[in-house]
Structure formats: structure tokens, C-alpha cells
Length: 330
Ligand code: AHR
Image (cartoon, rainbow, N blue to C red):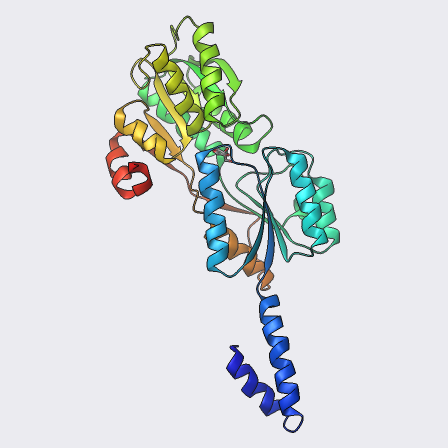
């Protein structure tokens, strides 16, 4: 109810004491109005990749659009910082807590603290390995499906014969665990497809470049290697730099498949340095706040997992993507 009609409503309810009551009600309402705007604590993983920074920016913009006070805490890739963040959100009596967990383990105590304070928790992007009653819902893509999409694309592109090196994401993180599993589910159907080397590049470009340097040394210049499978685009963009530095031809001498769909990979697809990337949508703030605000407004019939759809992009649609996404043209 807007302020002016609040006054009229108040006046009609309390005639003679009306003026004082009405004004005090107005002050209350204005204070209440401000209080009506929700305060939500968001514990974010860090700034490890272009996808992560795009997701953070979308969350902050969407919160602003909705008049939500977003207490944004970025953990620098350290889950202990996230446990501290949850504790500080509980102390500040926020209306809800949103977590994008660095790793799947160790969350029970922090979520129990929020539950004891009657603060609903929503898990976004990644996953936690806890009793499901400790959070309301997870809003995230299907990482296992992403791995299967990448594996299926490579099986078709290599006609089922391929020695692969794998750039893994952050150890013990849901995307690394599930993308590896999903990819393996598909390639294990093909007797001539094998992951011959696998190591974590921690989802960063620097990590991908460094691990690729090691792979190049271990395989005498990626001899007998037909493909690079990376759990995210930033690591494969780093690997492309390392390969070019060794006069290799990423996208030609080796097939390059990854996940995220960040602007840099669309440029690499257009240049022929990469071959395929599974898109992980980063503009998911609207879905997340729809669920959080719906729940705070009393809606209780959300599925435990609200799945964000995935998509696969190849060189064939790189030009369209570049025109559709201005940030991809920079
Ligand atoms: O949790 C999603 C993953 O986290 C993204 O694929 C990656 O870029 C980020 O580090």
C-alpha cells in the first residue's frame, strides 16, 4: 500500500486521535516499508572465472532492481570464509541466506545455525552434501548433464576414438565432481575413448595454462592426444595460450571442449581455436530471487531442485552468438 493511501486508511480507522495516530502510523509504515524491503545475505564462491563475475554482477543488479538489500560476501575460493559469512548473516537477522558453496562438504553446522535462527537457506549454482531439510531449495544447472553433453559431442566429433586430457575444476566442488562423472558416463561407452591425464586447474585461466604446460611436457607436445576436455572455459582459454606458445594448433591438432559459454570462448569458437562449449547461464538472479521472495511471501511448493537449462554451442553458431552477445564482440 503506498504512503498516501496508508494515511487515508489510517485516518478512516482512527478519527479523533487520527492525526497523531495517522502520522505515527505513517512513520511506522515508512520505517515498516523500509523494513518490508528484504535483507538477504549472499555468500559467493569468489572471482575465479568470467562466468563467476558475470553471475555476481547479475545477482547484484537483480537485487537492486527489486529493492533488496543484498549483503554480498565473496569468499575468495575458501569455504571457511563462507561459514563465517553465514554466521555474520545470522547475527544480522537477515530475512534469507543464499549460498553458492565452494565445495560440497562441511556445511551441516553452518546450515544448522541458520535453521536454529529460523532463517531460510537457498543453495545456488553449486551443491552441498547435507540433510536436505537444512535448506529450502537448490537453484542450479545440471552439471552431470553438462559433462554428458560435452562427452556426446566429443564422441561424435572423434568418431569414438580419442585420447583425452582433462582440466578439472576445483577439487571437491559440485561442478568438478559431476562434470567428470557425466563425461565419463558417455566416453566409457566407447572402448577407444580414454582420459589419459587429468588434473585440477581450479577453474582459473592461470591454472589451465599451468596444467597444460605440464600435460605438453608429459606427452611430448600432446602426441597421440586428440582432445582437451575442460570443466570451464577460462581454464581452456589458458590452455589455448600454452598450446600456441608451443606451436600447437588448438581446435585443429586437438579438439577443445569446455563449459560456461563466456564471451572469450565465443571469440575462440569464431577463430577456430575452440570447438564446443556447454553454456551455463549466468543471468540466473531472476530465477533465484523469484524463489527466495516467493518463499518469504509464503509460497511453499517449490521443488527441492529448480533446474536451470543448459545448451551446447559450437563453431557453427559462434557468429550468431557474437552478434547476440555484444560483450562477446569486445
Ligand atoms: O559452479 C560453476 C562453475 O564455477 C563454473 O563453471 C566456473 O566457471 C566457476 O568457477
